[in-house]
Amino acid sequence: MRKFTFLVGLLCSLCANAQINVFEDFDFEYNAWANPESGIDRFVISTQYFCGGTSAAGALLGTMLGQYGVGPKYMYSPIIYGNNGQDIHINYSVIIGKANATLTALEPVPEDTDWGYFTLSYSLDQGTTWREIQHLNSDNFISTTDCTTYDLVIPSSEIESDTSFMLKYEVNRNASYNEVLISVIDNVSIQQQTLSINDVSKKQVSVYPNPATSVLNISSSEIVKKVEIFNQTGEVVKKINHYNNIKTVEVQDLPKGVYILKINDGDTQKFIKK
Image 1: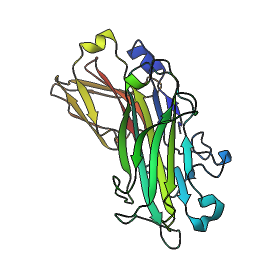
Image 2 (image 1 turned 120 degrees about the vertical axis):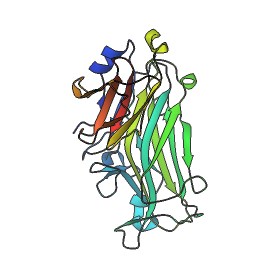
Image 3 (image 1 turned 135 degrees about the vertical axis):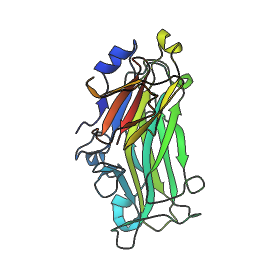
Image 4 (image 1 turned 60 degrees about the vertical axis):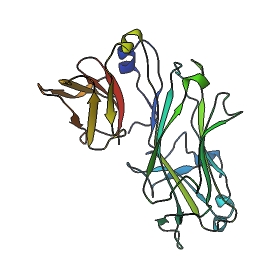
């Protein structure tokens, strides 16, 4: 299964500039993001709770776990290159809950319970300083046993072209919260649009949901009569031609990963199949 993936050949043929396109689903025992060899303060690969696939990055915090339950817990991305100066879009799924009494199942944290915090930050100096772009706690997050997906943006005004960066996820338990806190991160996507002179005159097109599991919806200001889907190597994996307006594409047969959808031999959109 492909892990830390970059769309290279296809994207270079579709646009004039480089761009970021990273997808991490943690379905591998050894992982550059969630690496237990980095220390007991890190997220590790969890095969018990995940948002698709077979595993995710997970962290447990609680006094009954001894030194392994002391927070905060961190997960760092590798250094990410290829920034072309456009907005950087970050999509990921998270579960925050608590373990039951026997540590065998996940339960929601009761509402209005101050369980702690969960943050996402980025660094432009390889981890020396961090800028927080998301802060979750009991005031703005409702704990469930399901995955919650977030779409966040690092504006182009905050990161210059060609500047590399890193992401950091951090979670910690409130000292007064006596349960075992469970945090799970899965399906991290970091994407960047590329704008060229030709892009300005193109019609507006979007696809949703993204990530998709079975059906991908197409919203376009023009009639869509042709759809092509390319995989990470630039191979056409699905092609549809129709005299009517194409509004949906079935993708349940596609392997999990990052794809590019192209309509009418023009506009392109990246999407994730999970």
